[in-house]
Image (cartoon, rainbow, N blue to C red; front, side):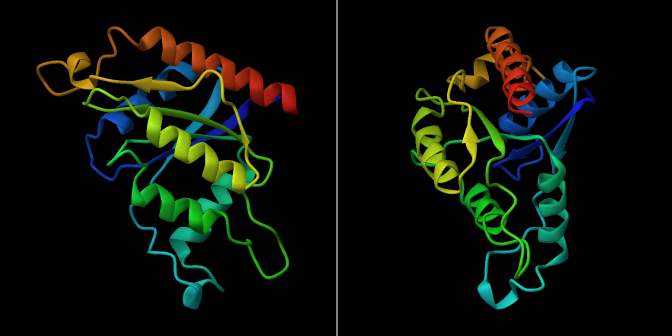
Length: 186
């Protein structure tokens, strides 16, 4: 079997966000086991049906990446007990038909969810909301294991870089489980 292709969507635009750093650690871990690309969603415009066909270039770009991916791994921060508007907007675009004759790219696509937050609650509440949305888009969500890391700043070094001292084994377990999850669906 060829290497599987995973795309990651990070629900934060901040250049040093904890969730982006978490995605990069996952990317390093799966190197050699799977192809892993973190999608840049910073140029995705607000969803607007007036510009849906043809979709803006940035939307077409991420749709193509998701379309050929074997799985999508979401790294979701928690804002006010919900996932971010940036992530919701991206999913809104991806959940729309690819064209007037072709369905959307998320349907039946395997999905994994992780998140890290500086606060106490981790990202559990946001993840539950995200599962509801992804299920509505007909994604095949891997509900176990999901990863929610609270007190993320306790795993950041003096340079502000995430080191995952206490949580790395959980991330690696989730990565291996997601790769197996995808392979078992093929």
